[in-house]
Image (cartoon, rainbow, N blue to C red; front, side):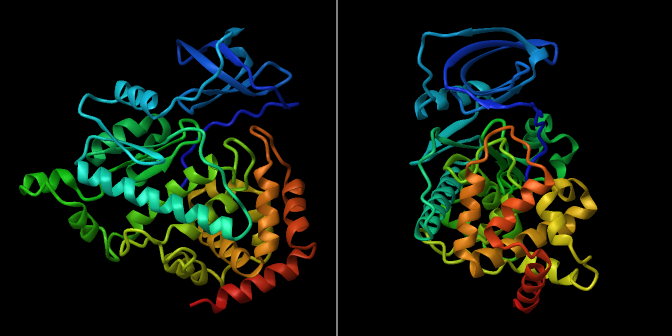
Length: 378
């Protein structure tokens, strides 16, 4: 799932020409010095700044202390510079495992970091290929994709508390729109394995530990969050744009079905998500007619724990239906959403207009077709 983040609602947003600027802001009783590109500027003086480490900072006008244009050109950190920053931020026992697109910063075993890097690279490759074959060509990320892997749940929770608060105990991994990083902990239970004298697992042994119905959902969560990271870095969505949560979450659930049986392919991409299907079909008899329209136009269903139990499986079912049965219309819808600018805010009517433009005006008829399709899935 997505973590909670604060999105500032800035009025009269106007995209501005990228320029490197130095900003000092006051937040949490301390001064913060930033240098980067101002991506969006509001008429009231609020800004959204992208820094060289990939962070996006939403800054309210009252937080700004100083702002100056720098003569130095803005340059995103390369893998080396970003690795140095990560190691300076985290405890001394952290190391970097580098892959083609990822920096896995970890204090767990090297084989587990390698396992994570391999999993992420496979997902990256199949995600790009999947959408390229369907007419949506993604681009390479502007920054190395960062995954932080803690050796145990306790240290992960301590680190994640600043972003997730009390939810850390129920979330085993997350992608942050602010930091652009995926954060998680070792799913093999490394600390307990060390107590048993079994800490030096090979990647093959790690894979065998994480294959099976008892671990499928934990691995699926990590894939889910990594899917968000790819989508927000390769041109499908823009961070802090008003992307409907049903679409963002439905897309991640579509890809979260793990395939740990192959070192190269991913045969389960687009397979029926049995967990989400079961959850959705179990609610069909009590489902309120018109729920689809509410889901499309309003993200609040995901912010209430009780409503979210229905919103997530319905989002998967709707995304599955659209990708499989309306591929061209879904592609057009994705293209529309990919042009949404950061910190914009669409009304409920605007969201419905985007959906109707892609899939047709009669939402009641569309919903009935969708429900018939979903009820027949096995």
